[in-house]
Length: 189
Image 1: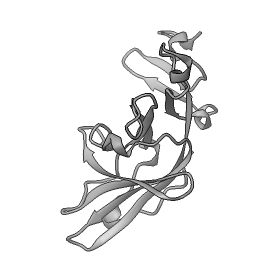
Image 2: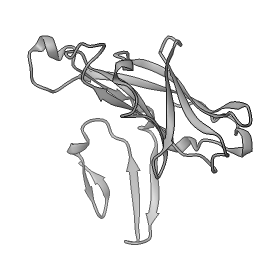
Image 3: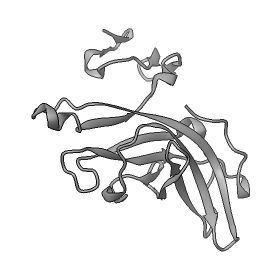
């Protein structure tokens, strides 16, 4: 779930809110315990214009209780900005789930500014792992994921001119492997 777009920051820069992705990075330990799994945040986004000289993007993620948790530097990855990911220390991972507030910000030491470009909330859920092992270990081996149920009522219809075809895209609940793509009808079970 996302909150409304914040006003554009300096130089008219704004985060393209329909491109914001918040995912989890799986960590197979938690505070030195290799039997308990945890996660770290990964945020991807793009903006409406080039970043001003001297500025940099970063993201702040709060815990569900509102306490500060993570500050992530953002780097351009060729098609989008990414905050967190493999460069974020695993020792700062969490085993919490719930609704996590987060913000995408831009600071510019040359201009003396630090502005919030986007604020949102994401619901992180957990589920037991399907890995094999003793039940006592599997109870702590949880997989954390972004709950996407808010997107289920949203569908997209779009035209693809190369095969001259109308396509449909939408979210479904369950294992994506149970769904197959067809060239004439889009998605079928």
